[in-house]
Image (tube, rainbow over all chains, first blue to last red):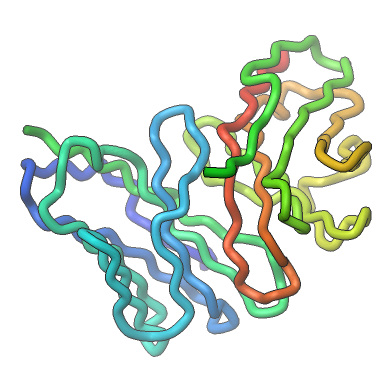
Length: 111
Length: 116
């Protein structure tokens, strides 16, 4: 079983739609959960960082963690064409600094 | 806003040659990392570095790889004898205090390495 599973998409939505991106993981040692955005041929850019179950909101972005189900989500409200990118979930075990990335979901928001 | 920088942006080399990829982490950061992303695949951890020592490394980071902080600002990844399968995007990252578990990592724009 892979440590982190993420549907690679692509996901295509119209401008203004609510987008839901998800990852599941198998190792309960993961305690820290990040979402990165990666534009084509660029480095990952940190969007959200959470460490507890529940929701964390930042503008149009909401990160949700359910540790009991080993399931994390990123919601994007009022999606914009500029949100078109690959979204990577990244997980970290306590006591370690090695980020484990999902495969990334490619999102296209069309006008 | 401070950012991680990397040079060169692109590097083409012949199989068997040595390459050095360079990074300038964010100035007050203490932990440094290298990751790589083979085209179409996941971002993979290679190595983390703190206090002039490797703190963790992956199975990928074998004897042909080495890292160094030659001065107060640069952090380098050396591949001694490149193989075709080393072709990838190499990302440098840094974090303010890796000892604070969960400290977030900030990534550079990457160096695209092509081994012919």
